[in-house]
Length: 267
Image (cartoon, helix red, strand yellow):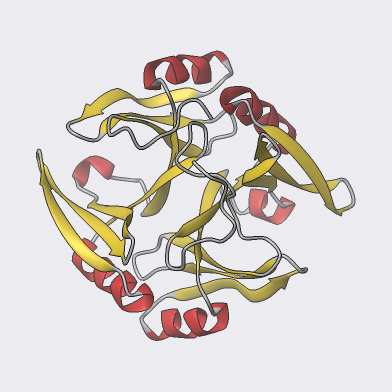
């Protein structure tokens, strides 16, 4: 897959980890995905770490602030969606029932961002790129692959994102459930599923999936590095094989071994 020079509008473009143990989290992910890193100072003994694949930015992480720890906020991944105008998106999101959590604000010369809580309570961010487009490599192993919203009241939440971003909604019949695809002009960009009673106690959230060459091997590797496999490697017919993992600091993410030949396993 060629390197990206710009991010498609209305598609996920960046993934950022807020970790309760920045040093431990950095060690886990760089070993798991064979990433390199670049620690960029953002304060006294505080860094914004670019996680890299062969010198290209693929994601980032930073140390959770003390006030977040005191509020019992768990370590978590946050996805960013590329937009043309962050301020306009923030205003429209509020009109549609979302809550603005942070911003809109400039991130130095890199771009402009805002983070919201959607009407169902899931957190997501939006990015108006300037010098930094976001993830520079996609459709390769060990890079962000898919984002999936688990929510309650999916019909209402789907309408929110459709009105906000112009996403078209396509419902796929799957075994035991309906699965919603969010699509833009280029095709599917994200997914959504309805949380059932089995999800009791789990808040609505956007899940990030990383592409991997071997789901089973990566699940075992994550365990050897101190992670916990929450959902063991499982086949999804005509899609691939996935697993859900909790990192040693408590952040949850998924991995996907695609069976569609869309992932460059040699890059």
